[in-house]
Length: 450
Image (cartoon, rainbow, N blue to C red):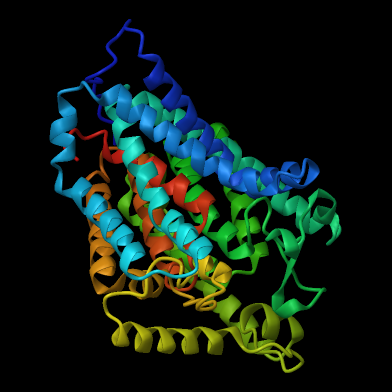
């Protein structure tokens, strides 16, 4: 699986890029590095200098600036006209346009409405941003750099998450401004039980951290598969072990399921000497794997009535005073279906999902499912356009699965994230959305036709 070597149509060897192009590229890199650390940095600096609101929105302002600079740099390029005629690009533009039309005809609380628009379209703008940069520069070079940035920052996130669970006290982040009043909690617990902590590291919450790690895991595994010699596999192997541990410590069942689906997908789609080596030893590996599953299932059954299993796995401990999260999710799904059926055109951006927490006019509507959220806000038309974008993106990555390990890793993560989005509002999280869609853009663009 060798990456295709495609020369840039804009920046030729030895030619200096325009300052607008260069600046937009640095902003793109900066956003990839910053988004997983955004909550930590913006909360700390925002509360320290009393500029919390500005610190929270600065990333979105910078993203728009970078996108506009990329457009300016590409404005005189002949390929831009063909790019603009792409059905794929038009699906994104139509989805954005439909969202804005609903802002006019389905008005709601202004703050929630603005937040809803930003949450729903910012990662697609970042995706288009990456597609343009890939035509302005050597796509393989900037993708390689982008993957390095993601993995290095990911190592920081994973390390801090494990440190948070093993060393830091529960109130450690309160000294950096983490408070409910500031929109972030200093610690999370299973069913609010202080002896069952959940890590969120520098990400907003444990579920979002778990989904972010779903992206990291196959990328690191790809590095493991690339190495020819056993001694070179230790660094990615250790990081993968840390990612798995950190994912476990989020105690996000959706993330656990998503990670398993991701790794299985990656293994079956990829092709490498290590996989061939493992398949040669399948007479040992498969029985060992199945035996491990049987032992784990047996242990869960034997200890099904214990405090740990009841809380961590089942969330059904009798001492829990909070409503069962499984029952909450089923109820929310049922109500979402009813509300969508009653108003198939959509209620408008900001009326559902995380943005609706700020909605003082119609109240909070947490659908516990990103697809239901989009259908609730933008109706069946919006949902259809969004699903078309997802399917087109997934298909392009599937067609490229033999081009590079990155394409295979992102496709595998796509499967895992498709699952977690059934359970939580994952694409609304900046760390997850910008990381996956940014890398996906650079990967898809390595084939000329978008």
